[in-house]
Length: 132
Length: 132
Image (cartoon, rainbow over all chains, first blue to last red):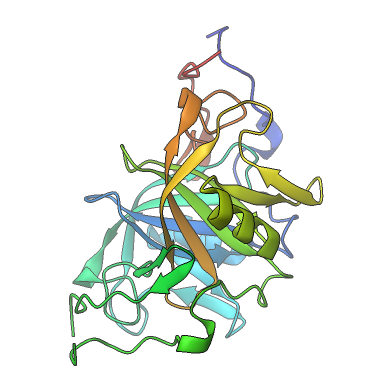
């Protein structure tokens, strides 16, 4: 449609995120398909992006371990990807996922974003974890 | 509650994100309070974090311009922060916001994540922008 603002993409580079801005990484958000809740934020390199597309399961690059990380590889709480979106400048990934096992967070909570900041102070969430 | 998994925070460092892992930055997500839609992802340094807390309006660090960026400073489409959350390891920020002006994206679309990836190929969103 002619009224659509052209975005900055072109046909030659529309199939992958731009890994050049952040030492080979892009930020990747996992959002719960059922609730809309933001579950976690990780980073993906080309390898993690490829693995996510190939398997349909969210993969990240673990910065602390320096390797490919299949989410849920030890806990079993994998994230099945229903939809992937890229942002306008192709340096952020949004994955709409089905979170298996009830929790994305290693603490057992559904979302990693369980700590609220109020009036500049962090308020620890005392909600018991979903699982465990 | 005793059943709560202890998280890794302690009282001395509970009031701010950990800026040490990403060259002084943390990833910051803006999520629409009304719809749950993920609007954009940016980065915050200490200055942008402080400005966000102080003003109640989302501020980011513009990597391309190398300076503090008040979201909406030119478009008027500011993001009023209703809630701030930090993730379990304190290196990602989630802001629940009221998006003024109907669009977070500089293309005029409501969300920056308007490009869908299907079967490994990016599908350009032909939805006309909300505003303009």
